[in-house]
Image (cartoon, rainbow, N blue to C red; front, top):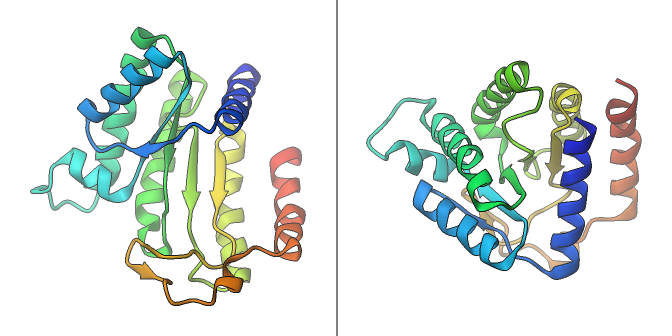
Length: 202
């Protein structure tokens, strides 16, 4: 498990230092293309999934409320099965999850917990919660609640602090004052104080 966490740390540093780009993937063929490209470059890769991408993977005609999560899980299992054949490290990540999409997030965590029981590591490497529409206190409370479930499995939680620019998942902040798009040191410090105990002392 500690080797798993160390590998994610090394890959993240490599991606930052070499300015690699990550793209969302919505099918097994696009995921395979990313694995092939990464293999040719001898580079780690982040396979990023989204709520909409999960629905596409499941099939747009499937109207079941669990379809988005099922599609993401199916693609994650596919990537895990194929990655050894390409010989490169892979991070599986899910992108922006607004409060209205938390049932999708819940289903992904359940899939992680089931996979962890069987394999000793989570299905996904990391997830993102985007609660930038919510008050700071609620954002922190919800993220803390999920992080308590994620930390024992060594899953990273990416959270959105403050306001996101542009448009994401139907939330349009393209007209917001640019100065409000920057995170303040005070906002970061509050979150560090809230989350450090969860991460290191569970």
